[in-house]
Length: 224
Image 1: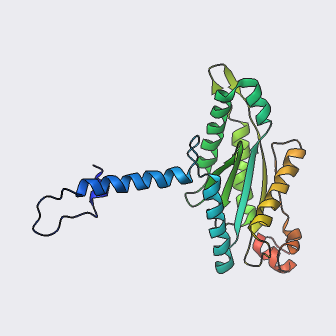
Image 2: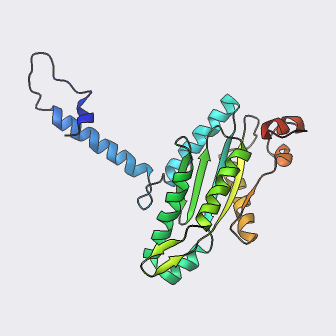
Image 3: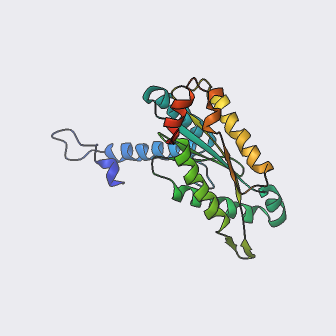
């Protein structure tokens, strides 16, 4: 029996042995494992899309209350479908796990890394300004591009396209609009040839927020 499961389970006074103690501990462990299965992607071990939506909605609400922005970055592996068709699903899965490991290793424990669908990943940066999240994302992009995937048939070089945007206290967009805006920047990166990151410019935030130019400069940490 898992010792951690025992810690909060004690026999009633006067009963030296609890026959139900081990059964309850097993049930707790099963519930924990099922909860993990529901929220994680089986291949990469990252959060899945269902949990991604829950996490992002939570952080958007937090930004509304705290005034500290949440930045969302989406990542797409360039030409992955062609790679998968050419080299097979085994090699494709290896690439996905390789990329997932790099992404997860380069973010903070407070950041949330998810595999949304196929070769698309997402990073939720809670309480993080856009410029800081973009720096982290671009570092991840460089590491992916410079870290070939080693397979028994050889080495494969991969690159990634990225899109990013920020949600703030003054944002006037909902969840779907926010995610769609990041998808648009991701598409822009793909159409630019891949291996790059495209993101909203602070000068354009008037389209999705109620703040003025001076406040945008303050949020970005730039001088007027």
